[in-house]
Amino acid sequence: MALQARPLRADAVRNRDSLLAAAKQVFGERGLDAPLEEIARRAGVSIGTLYNHFPTREAFFDAILPERLAALELIAEAAMADPDPWNGFTGFLEGLFALQAEDQSLNDALARRLSLSEEVRASCHRGFELAARVIERAKESGALRADFGVQDLPLLVSAMSQVIRESADAAPQAWRRCLSFFLDGLHR
Image 1: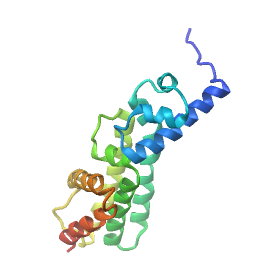
Image 2: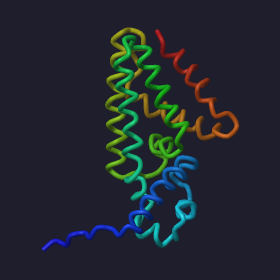
Image 3: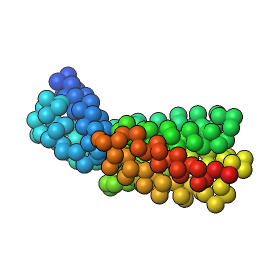
Image 4: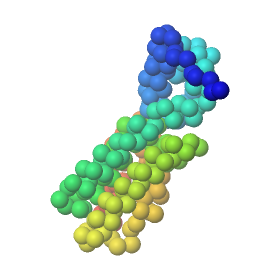
């Protein structure tokens, strides 16, 4: 006979919600390798309470990243809706890298800096499948170089994630300049 999980007490629900809110803030500011102690401190709970709700760092990733990665779907939909395939492609990349610049946890997840669960990897994969459609559309229009493909996107994401990470404090918009150089090289 399977055991049914008892519903959480009200204080446990508040603690879990506080931990999730703090994790979104801390990971967003500092990346996925941020100290869990900082999350517990911001949530106003003990580290034991944190581990009671989220026994591993990856449990936090599973709780917060899929929802955040879903924003890629909106960016891809907007790109596909743009009547100009080149503008759609550039808008997709700008939106993708703006998300990464705003949220270091997404920056780390998309650059695959840490080991991620199957659920988070699947969310990333769905984003890249949508990117493939955006890329193909821009190539078919003749605006994007024929030799650029979705297989080139992870390398670009990784490179831009490093630019974003390294320039976040001193020049938070530096990635835009790098992207413009890259786009100049891809436009036909």
